[in-house]
Length: 139
Picture 1 (spheres, helix red, strand yellow):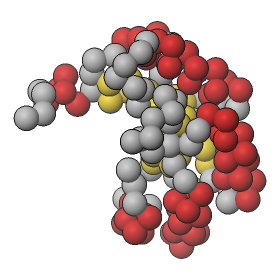
Picture 2: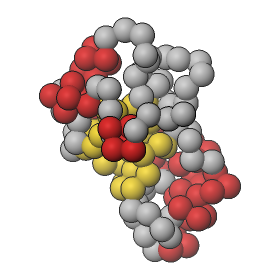
Picture 3: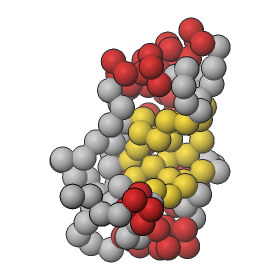
């Protein structure tokens, strides 16, 4: 999760943010981008499993949030991102994400980790996170 107090450090250093999950964070990113005359590529984090312990925009709120970010804040939203629940079919969640992404006409989709990246790529992911496949399991 990107905290709003860290945005001022992130904007000058990075080209992408994969975890936009609130209006407050969107407003802070917009404000900081103006200071640096920079346009980051941003993924909206979706709480695809409606899990209370996870951050992200609810799928039913996506269109309103996306329109606010692009029209009011002029953010460069390039895609959606999710971390699916551990229970249930990841393929089902990834398929839902692909449909949401396509409904907005977005080109990028960030989903899939070391344990499920093959399914994610098959279902349209363009960005994957494979940390434990590279660095080993966390202790």
